[in-house]
Length: 121
Image (cartoon, rainbow, N blue to C red; front, side, top):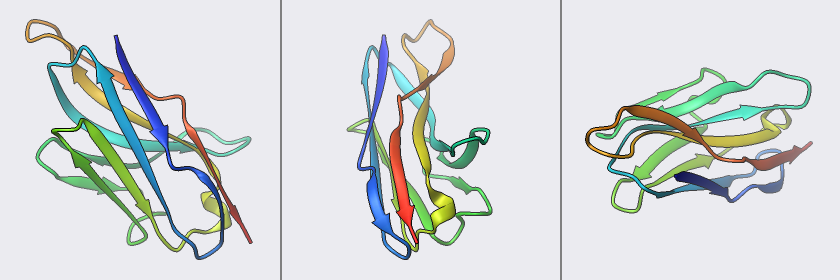
């Protein structure tokens, strides 16, 4: 079993910052990509950012230059530093990880429950 638990969400004014964290735990042999998605009320889930095991990053155009994704492989954690937040960034943010549970297993994606981020105008 693999669990992903997010933290760091909350209420912030427009222009403010938040830092989200996500911890992976359980039976984990290796983690490949980790990342973040978000889902706003009434909208489909959308990609925010991801990071490979060797640190290569990719961002959605709407957050590029404002958000920074990072990870700590030893701690099995991924972070999302969010600056210059806008009301449109309001959503539930979920982290995910592409995990190999055993060296003879296959890779699977796991998701956290999400953390609410609300940006007031």
